[in-house]
Length: 473
Picture 1: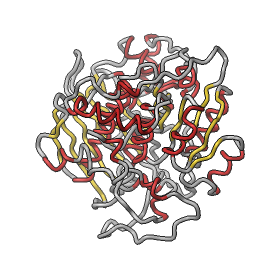
Picture 2: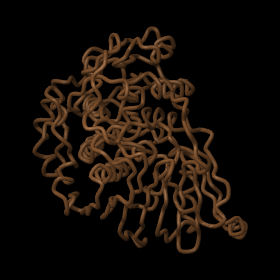
Picture 3: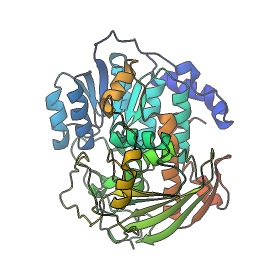
């Protein structure tokens, strides 16, 4: 087992190589878990076991392919963690993931991480350095640089399965998009509209606020220091907890980071978009220094690549910010597989989360997660019906796919080397949101060229003392 002390030492050795973009990252920490005989269950530890974490635990349980060794949550003992504890009373319990790796790391082969965005990086990096297969909720990490480091760490460990939790990547849309592109149905795409116009996981705070909320009484037994992770100190407040963290720049990635991976994953992968050269904030309602706007429109411009034309991707979020809808759009569908949240006051608009893809000859309408595309208007769809290829069925859902990859039987469909770049696109969008400006980005040097302050935000501010072991660069 690789301990945290080994991890820190290896990070120090590898630091110069990372800074120069070489291939020297974390080689000494590579460790291959024992291969499991056919049919033997994957020993897993869950980090973040309430709310969305609880849903992930249920999904893994349905596979009947896991043996749960450990449960970790900074709020262990709170009401929202009790279901997981009740399901696995014999599993070891921890509040600090670092202690879990130190004391029980030898007992499990894989981890599933469902914590706030700002803690994805340190947990995932430690897991990889400890030789563990990793399933982590989207987005992969919060900053551009964190995504870069995780992609490099995963590349150096091809024997470890990595999977990000955009479950649509194992559902019908993934296989349909791939088949339609290979058959030439999807070609010459020049524009994509992605929209998330519900109030899901959102807020109604005062955008004129001039400081962070005043601290409140910390819930009993909560490990707030570990919850904060590498980010700067904030006193506890209920508006940071239970999903509300997603709304704050310091903790989450807003609607874009939350839903972008469910709307743009197949577009980004199969159109080989890579990184944009321009990111422009076109509209912001309620812009401020602390939390994401009530609604926003962001334009991402991608250059020509591999014989495909340039593509403009426009992101819309907010109840008052519906995108233009083409003629013949029809009814806006909602994928029934979208997980529910712990919020009961979600407002919905007439337009469910989805995307519109514009090519030279065709327009495609799609929903979120695994929802399939349709050609619009309906008359055009009927005309094209005889040309559409057969779409293969998914051999495994997203959770089965990860576990089968841990056993060496499949490859994950959403590995870090694919989704890392997608999440870097989101991090660039967040910088444009936060500064409410236009950015020019060089995909070759991976630098923002027109704004030094924005360029510094690719890495964000230094981590808190005690958390810099994950950033020894």
